[in-house]
Length: 338
Ligand code: NAD
Ligand code: UDP
Image (tube, rainbow, N blue to C red; front, side, top):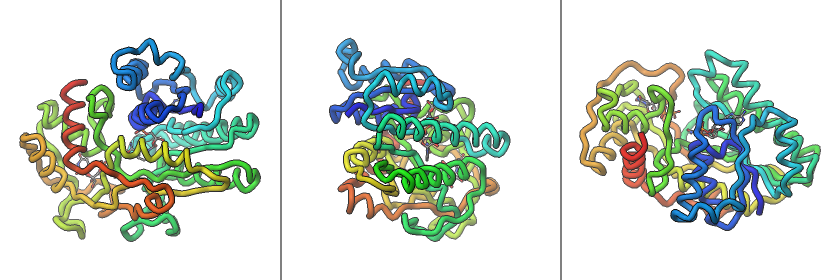
């Protein structure tokens, strides 16, 4: 199939491009590079074609465009006979979304509206959307797709709830359209080559990139946000999933799309606390991670992990890579690329 991947130069998008190309699909990337670099496209080619990038030119095409720009997006739809869209492009920093709510609502909602409008206009009826476990709010773990969603605590989370709603309503009015809403848990890790991975600007907000920067000596020590949660050791519990497992999840979601809206959790189903992740990283890589316990981070919930059984039942997809592999691959990328 010929797939438009918005945000394909970003962290999850780039790994998904690799998985799509390896599965034999052709990829059109649309990214404005607001949080990524064009050289990632060359690295994707390098991974897939093992050094012979020239052969990849007809397999992956890159458009540096903003996907809120309807005219620019329409050109892509008219230039290529697309079979589907995977929509990763979005702003994703929770804290920043509180400071710049309008920028977040505009970017994340207008992009979804423009892309779904173009899909309907050009008869592209497969749409896969990057949602998030944040839509569950502070529900009881494990989170199941059928749960009633609870309020989110920030504009970023609201953009995911609203985008899910927009796409669901678009389906009701257009029954030939098919959408997969993929609710990701906590993506970490990197491609095993170490060529692509997560490279946040400035001081990382997320745990794993913070840990790898402490390991490298760029940051002095990890601050563990709270050790008084009702969890195994008092620190926050999350469902960390290897980004290549997540990428594979997109390929199977696309292959299995049928009319209607389909919601899937993409997680491992395993909760890991902050201190358990630190210990796993230390053991996997033989590096000590100094840390101190500080106050809870506002807006954090105690525990968030998936009931991942629906994706296994319906898509025959399960996350295969364990926490050790996540720690090894995250560290390899940090060493090779920063
Ligand atoms: P990322 O920032 O690495 O990738 C997003 C990409 O989209 C970037 O390359 C950026 O340049 C591009 N982009 C943003 N706005 C754009 C626009 N208007 N037009 C064109 N390109 C634009 O983020 P990621 O971690 O790869 O996340 C991808 C998607 O998954 C996002 O929608 C995010 O909200 C969602 N998600 C991420 C996580 C996570 O922890 N990383 C968890 C749940 C959901
Ligand atoms: N966390 C932490 N120190 C950090 C970053 C994160 O203790 O520097 C904790 C955070 O409180 C949460 C877990 O690590 O319990 C995962 O946080 P992250 O920001 O990676 O993901 P999210 O909170 O979005 O699930």
